[in-house]
Amino acid sequence: DAGVIQSPRHEVTEMGQEVTLRCKPISGHNSLFWYRQTMMRGLELLIYFNNNVPIDDSGMPEDRFSAKMPNASFSTLKIQPSEPRDSAVYFCASSFARAGGAAGGTQYFGPGTRLTVL
Amino acid sequence: RKEVEQDPGPFNVPEGATVAFNCTYSNSASQSFFWYRQDCRKEPKLLMSVYSSGNEDGRFTAQLNRASQYISLLIRDSKLSDSATYLCVVNWKNTDKLIFGTGTRLQVFP
Image: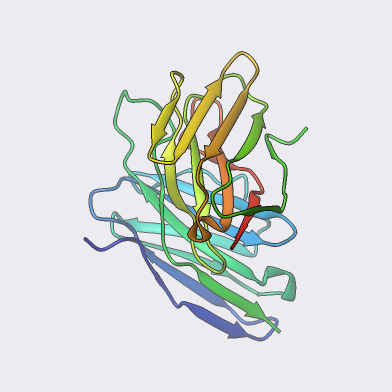
């Protein structure tokens, strides 16, 4: 079975440019999560969706970051304009949240996008 | 206080050794607990869920103490391939949001 798919795997861009990261969750999963990982701050949740609806975006650093999930099989994370401090690995993860079940189900991560902003 | 706290290590142990990692969490309403493993330059992968009664998977044993808000992972008979960073993970209150610790690095040497 295909896992979570992310593209691109690597992105090098210049400060001020727009960056779009893409994610395809595991088929059948109804929750999708975007994380950022750096050496200094570890793994941080940016935003998550349930049934394509944003539930918690409190981790989105500022207005330069936006995320969308137009359908159950696709999500984007956009940074505009990008800055050097945005350099990090961005992971997408998905899970299946059962209605009435315990919260916090197992999340499956994609391989990540390594972003470098010069 | 951090929501999930772990000793960053590194723990350097010889093959065959037993090693234990501990983790504390701050929110008593958390319901789901996990250990994830992350290899260098790779994504985190689920190692095991942690249940109140404790659970074992081969050489790995996880324990949860809700009263003390404490989670542990025991690795017996360490292998070179166990070298990785181990992330303690707890869900936030009663939500699907997972909070990851900063990880404990394990290095197993021959």
